[in-house]
Length: 198
Ligand SMILES: C[S@@+](CC[C@H](N)C(=O)[O-])C[C@H]1O[C@@H](n2cnc3c(N)ncnc32)[C@H](O)[C@@H]1O
Image 1 (cartoon, protein in one colour):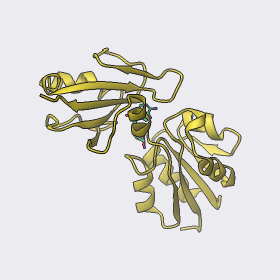
Image 2 (cartoon, rainbow, N blue to C red; image 1 turned 90 degrees about the horizontal axis):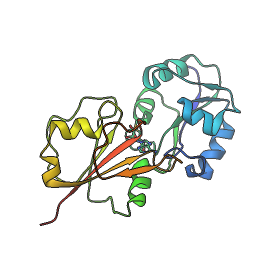
Image 3 (tube, rainbow, N blue to C red; image 1 turned 90 degrees about the vertical axis):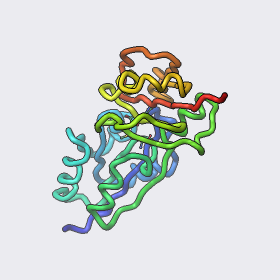
């Protein structure tokens, strides 16, 4: 394989002012940027870029064939939290990761709660849960695997937990709901299940 340096750059939960200065500097240093439309539009449209259809499969293939020496991969939130970076580090050797603000951290700041005692699950682009959560849990959702789909499958959730639905955290369309809405108009959705106290 050619001798590329790959930098996975965490861009934060979405809005332009939630990326770190280090992330911005890293973008400037790249010859080629790979990222989903929103991230590229917000942070890197002035750089040569590639927007894959399927972030995981297409990005890895693109990197293998890209002649650029310095390739930056934009990931939402923080690279260490349910992101493509685990596949990139598995596939390539010369990889650096720039940390960022996870949507989860930004979401907890929004509802003024502490996240350290929660369990974390992602159903984004995956199967719905097999089992009902038994403890306070954060679930990364999307439009298909939505909070409504989860609570329809496990209606007991509403007895055991208070819940918060965090949408488009940090963006102008940011919203917090404590009731099901049916549709949220975004795939950026986090369901926070907080165990009820007696
Ligand atoms: C592939 S995961 C990436 C998570 C990311 N690495 C992070 O640290 O936030 C995508 C999921 O993150 C959540 N997400 C990302 N940005 C969000 C935002 N601004 N508001 C709410 N949820 C968001 C959604 O659950 C979305 O389906």
